[in-house]
Amino acid sequence: MADKPIEGEKKAFMTGNEVVAWAALAAGAEIMYGYPITPQNEIMHYWTRLAPKFNRKFLQTEDELSAGFTTIGGVLAGKRAFTATAGPGNTLMQEPMSMAEMMRLPTVVVIQQRGGPSTATVIYSQQEVTMTTYGGNGEGLRIVYSTSNHQELFDYTIKAFNTAWKYRFPTFILGDGYQAKMRESLTIYDPEVRGIEMVPTTPYVLRPGQIGVNREPNHLRNTYNTEEELYEVLQKHISAYNEVAPEIVEYQEFGTEDAEIVVVSHGVVFRSCKGAVQELREEGLRVGYFRPITLRPFPGEQLRKVAERARMLLIVESAYGQLAKLVKDAIFGCSVRIEGLFKPGVGITSEEVVTKVKELL
Amino acid sequence: MSNTAVRSKVVKIALAGEGGQGVQSVAEILAEAANDEGREALYIPNFGVEQRGGVSVAYLQIADKPIAAPKFQTADIVVALSDRAIFRTKQYVGPETLFVYDSSIQGVSEEDLPRNARKILAIPALETANSELHPRVFNIIIMGAVIKATGVVSMEGAKKAIEKKLGYKFEQNPALRELNFKALEKGAELVEKLL
Image (cartoon, rainbow over all chains, first blue to last red):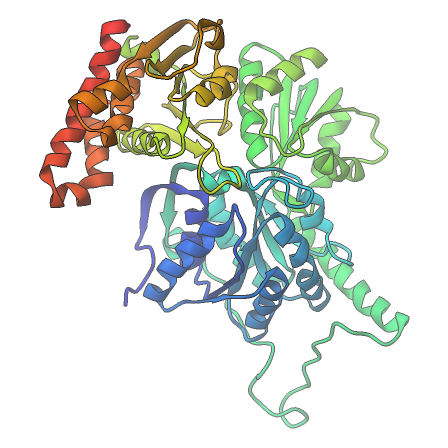
């Protein structure tokens, strides 16, 4: 049996789904639970091909509800566990992930967004933003990384396991069908050679010792009898979340000091916006970009500073205003003009962004 | 097209055909070849719910710097290998686009072809495959044509990438290697005559 999935680091050229499987292996994920749905199927395919070589496990469940709950089971047993899904599968996944939120369990879920609502297309969208950030019957106490290229898909999949186990909130990688299926180059690596230490995992159940003798009982609850009891627990969770949020928040910005228009986008659409902004800057136009990497927690303070200086924000997304909602909520009260380029379920090219910005300038 | 002209910008390629004509393999091999030559490549297939049939489109971009969006509005070269593929890919044609289609496609009139292309080439790839080589290397002829028209990778690089992808088949039947390489050269010739 091979020792490490990746020795040192090496250049690779592969699909995003393959990238996720390699990243999870490199991160020391011990088990994947899953149910097939396009466009994430190949994460499972590659995982099942690679996992046995490194003594890792896989369980195919009967649906995504079960895949989510078994992932919770794996985590309760102290395993670095994950699952992956998309679209209607993500809808079902909200039930178990609400439980993970209630119990503050470090589940890791990779989402490859497809067109919606319902079955819609198996291809691509950014329409699972609202669901992934605030889905379920809870308060969105989750961490959501939105990646834009294969290198980030690799880096943040590894990081997701550490964020989850460090802060104990359900953590999501929000990719999409384009990232899932396209091939491009990246460097894959053993986290150790980059100085990344994997946060150790610990079991929630079957802990050593005896209750009442040498350890406290371990209350694992998602059910409460009184309003006050629930309220008290949620207050703790919410303040814990708010306290760590500033450490978790990640974003990128460019040209925002003097920009008249700041283009706001996330995920794969950010690539088009970045390209467009660079082109417009070369023409001498005062345009910048702001890109949240974490959609939860959202870099609201940072965006507010940008919004206070700019004349206009142009929000670009392959959804009908799901990112826009997060933006408006974050900068409420700011008088900046907000425009949108919303194309639900459809890709957006740099050319379209350039055209839109020029219309607005 | 000179080599420097090619390398100063992203080359955008759209390949479309019927499922089974092998356009995805062509795009994948070209992407691998470009990557192996140290260039940036991004390849994405289109995919729908159908398991077979339907028009298959491959989007490929090759450049010297990281590539922005995975899909694009206007291609530098569009290759369409069936009537439906022509209708489907017309939208990617602009004033700078070279539009290539197979001359054996039936039922396509002058009006069906894009009117705004820089140049339109009809190449007898299918006929050449059937009469001179073998139907199975039809897509490799197309690959040769794309390489000649764009210069995105070297012929040597393409051969290495074909070897990487199909080497296991060549080991069992070395004549296949010869056949594939010949198809690649033939495709380049077909385009060279017309450019």
